[in-house]
Length: 108
Image 1 (tube, rainbow, N blue to C red):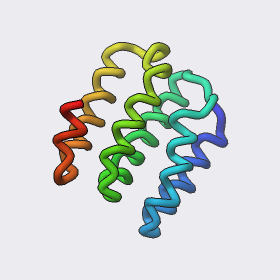
Image 2: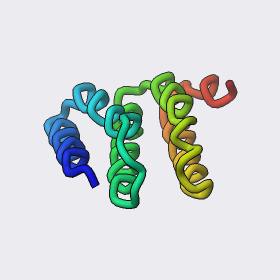
Image 3: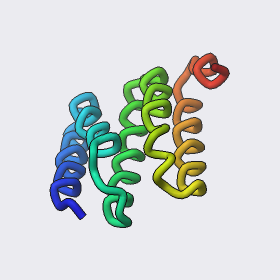
Image 4: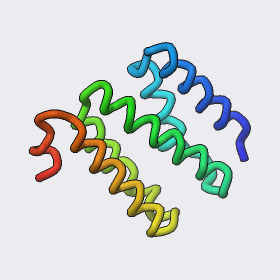
């Protein structure tokens, strides 16, 4: 696994802990969407980053950002197991549902 990936996740987590989710979002997006391998350990880091990213976007009330994230993840879904894909999609849809007045995003 790329040790740098784990370090990036830690720096993003530190930003979240420092109440700076807006600064953490680009770092988390890079972890999830960047050109990193999909081995077992990297996949765990990516999933953790994805959970944190969804939480940050919910805290920012950015339902459009969650929808964009779901679209951006499509190529990655082809390289991971279907069950994991379903779990990720469900998590993001549930995250969108946590944002007030986001039902139009869910309908589209």
